[in-house]
Length: 141
Image (cartoon, rainbow, N blue to C red; front, side):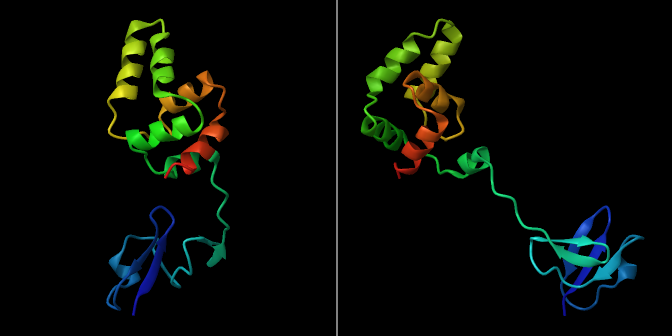
């Protein structure tokens, strides 16, 4: 039989089997009922359900799958942005190191991630909001 334990500094853990006791753990540990779900927290001697908050746009973007260079370029073409337009826009960056780094990021990636700053920079050059880019990104795989 599994048993639940809680310590105010360490949090909750579950011991598998029935051999563990409170005495086996650091002072201040108490035995508690098994945690009903990941959305429960131990408060005032009982499990209390705490609903998950909605993820932020940035958290959702982190979860978006990476795109291959071909997927990303095809998505741009689908919204009428041609690859040579991207290269030309990068060529207009006045700081040489930033220009060369941006060109490397555009020409040599193994994947594109939605949270790469280059993605929003490219979008802004062509009048796309981050939300517009999200829609394009989600429609490309």
